[in-house]
Amino acid sequence: MIDSGIYEDEANLETKQLKLKPTFKTTELYKNGVVFSNSKIPKNFDQIRSFRDLGIVKPKFSYQLSSGSGELQCLF
Image 1: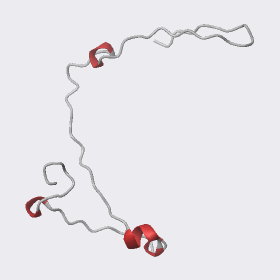
Image 2: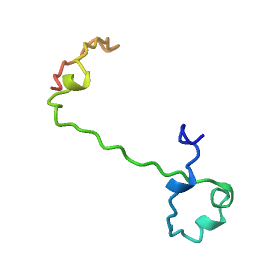
Image 3: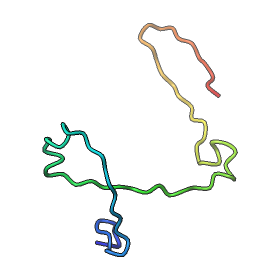
Protein backbone atom coordinates (compact mmCIF):
# COMPACT_ATOMS: atom_id res chain seq x y z
CA MET A 1 0.00 0.00 0.00
CA ILE A 2 2.96 2.31 0.54
CA ASP A 3 4.13 1.79 -3.07
CA SER A 4 0.71 2.68 -4.46
CA GLY A 5 0.50 5.84 -2.34
CA ILE A 6 -2.54 4.73 -0.34
CA TYR A 7 -0.60 4.54 2.90
CA GLU A 8 2.37 6.69 3.88
CA ASP A 9 5.13 5.11 5.96
CA GLU A 10 5.81 6.67 9.36
CA ALA A 11 9.13 8.23 8.22
CA ASN A 12 7.34 10.36 5.60
CA LEU A 13 4.26 11.15 7.68
CA GLU A 14 3.51 14.89 7.93
CA THR A 15 1.43 16.47 10.68
CA LYS A 16 -0.25 19.78 9.86
CA GLN A 17 -2.35 22.12 11.96
CA LEU A 18 -5.61 23.20 10.35
CA LYS A 19 -7.95 26.04 11.35
CA LEU A 20 -11.56 24.94 11.00
CA LYS A 21 -14.82 26.86 11.28
CA PRO A 22 -17.05 25.78 14.18
CA THR A 23 -19.92 25.06 11.74
CA PHE A 24 -17.71 22.62 9.82
CA LYS A 25 -16.90 20.75 13.02
CA THR A 26 -20.57 19.73 13.30
CA THR A 27 -20.70 18.06 9.85
CA GLU A 28 -20.51 14.33 9.05
CA LEU A 29 -17.43 14.97 6.92
CA TYR A 30 -15.55 16.35 9.91
CA LYS A 31 -16.72 13.58 12.24
CA ASN A 32 -16.18 10.60 9.92
CA GLY A 33 -14.15 11.88 6.94
CA VAL A 34 -10.55 11.53 5.89
CA VAL A 35 -8.38 14.32 4.42
CA PHE A 36 -5.81 13.59 1.72
CA SER A 37 -3.15 16.06 0.68
CA ASN A 38 -1.49 15.79 -2.73
CA SER A 39 1.81 17.37 -3.61
CA LYS A 40 2.48 19.09 -6.92
CA ILE A 41 5.09 17.52 -9.14
CA PRO A 42 6.95 20.28 -10.98
CA LYS A 43 7.26 19.95 -14.76
CA ASN A 44 9.80 21.53 -17.07
CA PHE A 45 8.13 23.45 -19.91
CA ASP A 46 11.35 25.02 -21.29
CA GLN A 47 11.14 22.99 -24.50
CA ILE A 48 7.45 23.76 -25.11
CA ARG A 49 6.96 26.46 -27.75
CA SER A 50 3.60 25.48 -29.24
CA PHE A 51 0.58 23.24 -28.76
CA ARG A 52 2.13 20.83 -31.25
CA ASP A 53 5.01 20.26 -28.79
CA LEU A 54 2.38 19.02 -26.33
CA GLY A 55 0.92 16.66 -28.93
CA ILE A 56 -2.05 18.90 -29.72
CA VAL A 57 -2.69 19.36 -33.43
CA LYS A 58 -5.28 21.60 -35.02
CA PRO A 59 -8.38 19.44 -35.52
CA LYS A 60 -10.87 19.99 -38.30
CA PHE A 61 -14.43 20.41 -37.07
CA SER A 62 -17.53 20.14 -39.19
CA TYR A 63 -21.01 20.96 -38.03
CA GLN A 64 -24.44 21.66 -39.45
CA LEU A 65 -26.77 24.28 -38.04
CA SER A 66 -30.49 23.71 -38.18
CA SER A 67 -30.98 27.37 -39.14
CA GLY A 68 -28.93 26.83 -42.30
CA SER A 69 -26.60 29.77 -41.63
CA GLY A 70 -23.38 30.14 -39.76
CA GLU A 71 -20.00 31.81 -39.68
CA LEU A 72 -16.51 30.36 -39.56
CA GLN A 73 -14.02 31.97 -37.15
CA CYS A 74 -10.37 31.04 -36.77
CA LEU A 75 -9.34 30.72 -33.11
CA PHE A 76 -5.57 30.66 -33.57
